[in-house]
Amino acid sequence: MSMTMAEKILAKAAGEKEVEAGEIVMANIDVAMTHDLTGPLSVESFEKINTPNVWDPEKIVVIFDHQVPADSIEAAKNHMIMRKFVKEQKINNFYDVNEGVCHQILPEKGHIVPGEIVVGTDSHTCTHGALGAFSTGIGSTDMAMVFSTGKLWFKVPETIKFNINGQLPDYVYAKDVVLNIIGNIGADGATYKACEFGGETVRDMSVSDRMALCNMAIEMGGKTGLVEPDKKTIDYIQKRSTKPYEIMKTDPDSNSLEKVDIDVNNLEPQIACPHNVDNVKSVAEVEGIEIDQVFLGSCTNGRLSDLRDAAKIIKGHEISSKTRMLVIPASREIYRKALNEGLVGIFIDAGALVCNPCCGPCLGGHVGLLGPGEVSLSTSNRNFKGRQGSSEAEVYLSSAAVAASSAIKGKITDPRNLK
Image (cartoon, rainbow, N blue to C red; front, side, top):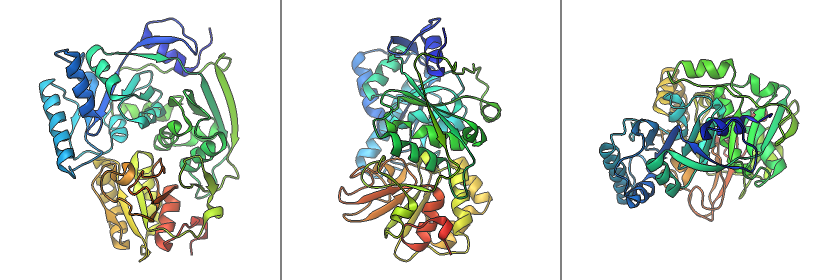
């Protein structure tokens, strides 16, 4: 029987020879991640189950990233709950306030390899499908069951395969590709489907760019994002992990496979406009809108390549006096490399604020919040009302290049028009 990548991974995890879309399977979990914001509820629910010990402490990863360092007494209490849990359960894979964003840390520290089932109490856990794993977000109470048993049920999803071909024009990136897809199919266009990204454009992308694609699968309703592993994937993994893995690929004649062809040769920089991620327009349609804040970072575009793209544009310029810019590397490793390459100095010299690796304003609960009526241009993944602070603020989403050129001008600016 022909199967998709998602079906093959779930079949293996469920101990089945084959599965098909629509079936319910009980799958063994390979990696279970939680963080400082959602972790305490998972711990509370786990304790109610009254299981004395987690099923496998080596397969659990706890990362502090949403409110780090603690910005309130409540956040500090959450950190205390999770530190106590980690100590009691002898969980070695614990990353405290100094490491960075969970969806960067998991692959960076070698926790993700192809063919695994990865769950996390964060909706953007789908990011890790960029390495060929079936990775998805779950609720905190579901995570309590995983902590207790190491298993979780799934409905096997259908798959949409986006065959992306063509050469990306100058100043057009993976973020523009995925925003364009979301704008075309809608926020519910891939509900509970595996979003697989392939084609020559994706093959040419770095692993970091593939992470940006998979990260936003949830913004079109997807259950997970996936990219077929190749040499780039293997090279990335071999530098970071010694775990065994199995590469699985989609059979082209799979029954549950829907194919969508996309040509990016003429794609322009894209902007998601308030207050929905699928409200996508070309940068030319919104150019000139004044902004109060630019946020460069997040689990979508806080990687080294994003910082490089932005720094190349900002070097020699100053941030507009009408605009503040926050630069937040996604991890300590990225921060250190950005320091060594002189990128941090470029941002500081231009007048930007460079913050510690964390989620920053993305979740609307930490640094850099927006006030009523303020407008932000962000490289993150969501722009719902209240997402980055006041419900009366507006958030636009873009690539790092658009964010950088806009910070210089104090208004949304096409980097191709920057003079």
